[in-house]
Amino acid sequence: MYGLSVLAVLSAAGAFFINTGATAHSAAEAIRPEMINRQDKVPGPVKREWNWRIWTGFLLALAVIPAYFLFFLRFPVTRDVPWASWLMFAGAGWLLLAGVSRAFANSAVYRGKIAGPILACLSLAVAIFFAYATLYASRQLPAAGDAPRVGEKAPEFTLADVDGNTVAMSSLLSEPMPGMEGQKPRGLLLVFYRGYW
Image 1 (cartoon, rainbow, N blue to C red):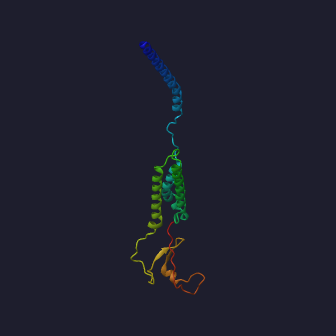
Image 2 (cartoon, rainbow, N blue to C red):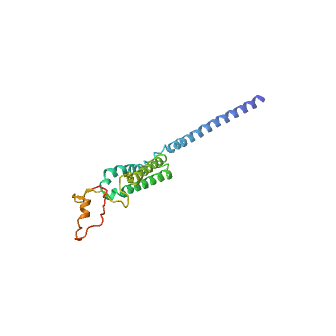
Image 3 (cartoon, rainbow, N blue to C red):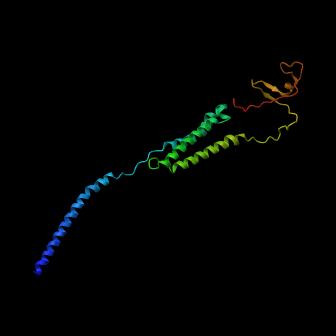
């Protein structure tokens, strides 16, 4: 009787283990397709889009200096006050600002969180150099030690006028001006053009 009850307990335990194994096996099979589906649904690394505004703004800022010396310098309206160059810098700044803002706002979609600020700083350095060269350095004239002081008599000179005729100071002061016959001029006004003709 004792042997029979041990055998009954063993057979019951065996049936439990067999059922548990079958249950575990069927549960694993039930989970496996679900896991496969999850792996299929996991997105891979997202390829971020090229942030063209940053690079276009940087290239536009770099193009200002060659454009000024190769094209804008030829015309007094864009040379004396380089407004066209400053408009190019303004456009470059707008593009850089828009590109950097886009990179920080949507960093998962657009590239440029690192390159954008670096290129913006380089563009700002180019603009500062251009401002220094055109607004300050180009207006620094060397000191003229032999130039007459205010109130001194000007030395005799001979220069070409606008039409290319040679004119001497003594002739201008001795001959009457047109429309003022009989009167000698009391003074002389010299106007120096910048020299870009």
